[in-house]
Image 1 (tube, one colour):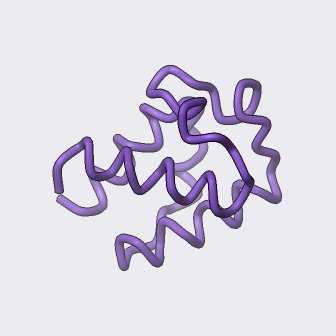
Image 2: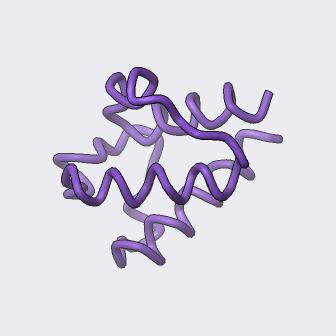
Length: 80
């Protein structure tokens, strides 16, 4: 799956779940400080990733996620 398609899915999910404006979702955006995702939101986000990819993101993989680019990279690995 192309990276730009993954990015569009991430924008859509963040908008649907947390009402984050899509133009705020950039590769450099920090999920926690820039987009104000908290730990409970992260659980919802992980569930959406599982639905989108059909694969579960391990806690180990998600611990290193800080930015949207990190999230996209994790999704790329899952779908590869």
